[in-house]
Length: 285
Ligand SMILES: NC(=O)c1ccc[n+]([C@@H]2O[C@H](COP(=O)([O-])OP(=O)(O)OC[C@H]3O[C@@H](n4cnc5c(N)ncnc54)[C@H](OP(=O)(O)O)[C@@H]3O)[C@@H](O)[C@H]2O)c1
Image (cartoon, rainbow, N blue to C red):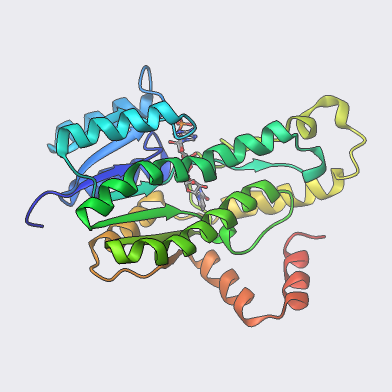
């Protein structure tokens, strides 16, 4: 790399974002490891300590993807300091779980605000800069759940399918300006994601003992527990992201993990009805 490229990673306090920020910095990218909370944040302290001890080109700055002002201030800071943005990794996200019927509009909008509009907000900030440069790569972390859907996770899938659709359209729109869009589709990753699952408040309420979805919630929770026993380390995702951003001609999609590869192959090879039976078996429905 002749000149140090400038990378911005959202949601760097833990998991995939934390590992990706370090991996990019270790491979010569000047990396802005952004996170929504700086004060008292263990993630901020940890990543700063590692960066200092390894002498990495990594800076931590505040960026809450839900907040217009926070996103524009972060982007302005980076442009003021470095004059360019080469790589954006839209990683920040969480999963809202629960039966659709028991999920409030506020919870649904919150899920879209972070996972979909958060990425859109950061892209709208970075695209004009990349277009002027006639160069840039935007990496959107979706999921295997951006192409197949499991029960009781409808809003999460909604956000990830939406981000896939947005990205697919943008690859044509931005290609002429030298901006590449890349999708990262991991299967289950061993991060705080599972601990951070947001359960719809009605579903977790003690008044909900007669929920018609109770049996389904129990069955699906069991499958979720099994998924968590077969995870890959977030650094595996970070390494694939690194390969994608280093490539002059990256693929549009990167599927990561045996689970993701197997389920997406099944999806490809089966007609809808057969795939539905296959999924019902997986979730004891
Ligand atoms: N883990 C998996 O199995 C898996 C599989 C496929 C895809 N993914 C996707 O991978 C991405 C990263 O997840 P992860 O596994 O690394 O989970 P994680 O360990 O829970 O990390 C999520 C990160 O997103 C941040 N975040 C949440 N809301 C934010 C906001 N409004 N503004 C800025 N940052 C925000 C969190 O910050 P705080 O510390 O402040 O909460 C945290 O840094 C997500 O988009 C997720 O959907 C995960």
